[in-house]
Image (cartoon, rainbow, N blue to C red; front, side):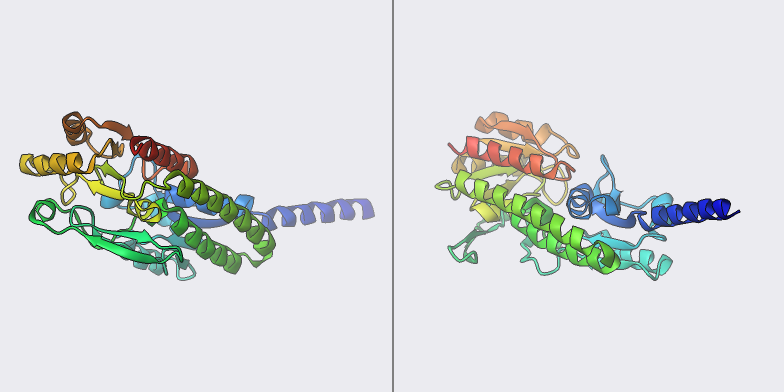
Length: 309
């Protein structure tokens, strides 16, 4: 009888241990955030992504199954995308216990006018943005791309990613204090890795300040700001540019000596290929929403640096 009782007790303790080790359920908006949270959270965290591969955050609507899953999640790590402003109140009404952490809070945001009516910031030795160059002649203004508010693509800047990692760490420790030591250790390792990459990029672009690259959709302004580069956008207010706009883009690209054009898999290649042929540039496909965040940024950095030679 005692043996049966002991066996039952061990079984119960084993089940309790499994239950205690069950990962914490959290949500993020996009795949690069999944990369960040998993690097810091490890196996203690189960990360769900709203904007899954192949979906467009600019026109995103959550699926019913995603809203149901949000109703049981512990936390949501927001990043400042426009759709979050309507989604989060809905999620919080379904799940009053949901903790929302705004990982972009405190980042020095770039004005939402990207590009051609551009303001480029170059960092001084103290890390502050000490130069601002504005280009507001008629040629630039009439094919400017405007966002509501600030540019939301903060995840594509290594320095901004370090800031977001700190917010993620704070959130994970709050919702799962028992994992605090592990989260802190993993966060430190992640930040060190990103700092190493940032230093590599700084060396890579040394002496190349002002080098220009062309993009269809402006998603790389934070990357450009960090290393003194110039992002020039083809897209006009979320639409394919008209013939007159393309002519101005081609003229500007020639003037700036643009040698590489980045296109995202979410958008048409047609306009980029027209411009590339006209100015003798190469076309590179890069996904600003890639889950392979580190690999993706290295590919972008290499392509810009090669074109800037």
